[in-house]
Picture 1 (spheres, rainbow, N blue to C red):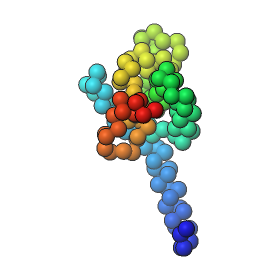
Picture 2: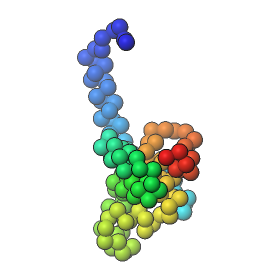
Picture 3: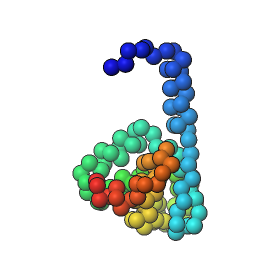
Picture 4: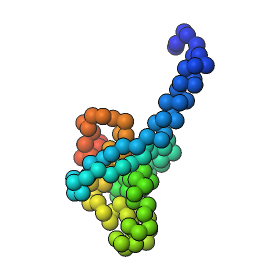
Length: 130
């Protein structure tokens, strides 16, 4: 147990850091596009929903959870014009219509590990251990 007490300044700094992370964006390279997509940092609620949906260890549930996470964190995928052009009626199907399952897993892992600069967690390893 820590013997020193937190200061008001530390609490304020912690809150500001959390706010900065909440609004952060990141570029994720997608091989099939040979380009980056911009994603937002997933919220705590989105991370919890993902964890809840994947606790069954079902591959189908995991792909659904990754698709939802990617869609929710990538504003570009929310385009009604895009959804119309690729003929999806359910917004979360946008991810599955554009990316194959390997890409969904790879992108999803990168979104989940938003602040990890190291890419040591590849999607296959994550899926094996889930």
